[in-house]
Length: 427
Image 1 (cartoon, helix red, strand yellow):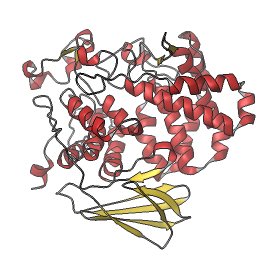
Image 2 (spheres, rainbow, N blue to C red):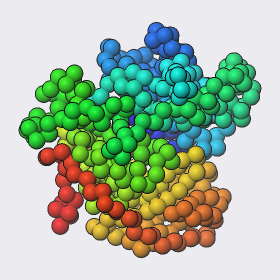
Image 3 (cartoon, one colour):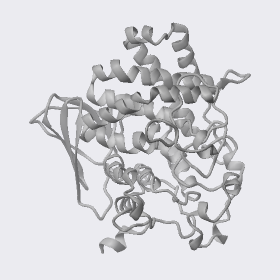
């Protein structure tokens, strides 16, 4: 699934980069099948399958799967992250450039410029599988934008590979133009981003009339009804707030998170970690801690009553992300590391290591300050709460942690769908 590139590979990229590179080389080995699938769907480039074992699509036609083209951008995102973190130019020449080119070609054939010149991507399914065949899914569009820009940049840096792949200057110009004009819907009346065009105008799901024994909803209600209501299986717009946080203001993140908390039922193990990350960013630290607990104990407590069928690997990876990207405030937009740590009251210290650009970085966080140490390797450039730092081996830097501004947006979850309180667990 796309879970691999979006949840597992970020962890491997920063802890076991060789494993991340191997996984992406496997994905590259499936390109012939992805190209064939694109042709079957009448598209250019490559279309990676929603579910696969050997590279071929393992699912029959299903709107939530066949139209989930965001997997192309998820693969591209993993390629860009891996290369930025490792500087592995051999990988980029042999694997990365081709993956970026073929995924970019899909977006240009799938999307179109409307009468006003805006670039639309219609009829797709985003990460939320309770919505399908929507126009301009914000997550899909913003991740496609990153894919298109990344492909254009890497083609310019690797002209030999570009020639071998038949990439022309006109094609890269078209990628950049589409990226610059991609549609990002916004509901002016509500002051939030709709998950996709028209989503905030749909009827709200009747959560109050839905018994706790009727979750997960997919086992008790027809998909056609889920598709036409405001109800969310797993983080979608909120995932965009994390992976494309550079496209939103702090105020937009707070408003969007509060709105979608009231609609998200977490019928997927993929959701809690992302909700934890954004809860921490907008200053809701106790809620972030609760969601972190859910992600980390998904299998230990068998929260979805299906651990007998296998481990929830993406949720396990998500618990690392909830610590590092959530409590640690780590972001890697445009291949640059930044941090904005903050801890809930129940935790006095959080420590983690990351491999980045040949160095091993340690972040040691307490309630008042964070200390960054390069344990080995060259000096690292990073930012702490917007301040640029150069951290050298043997010369740790400590910086104060400023408490986040929580603001006025205090979200509530659908009845019975709030995460278990960690305060009760740890008291």
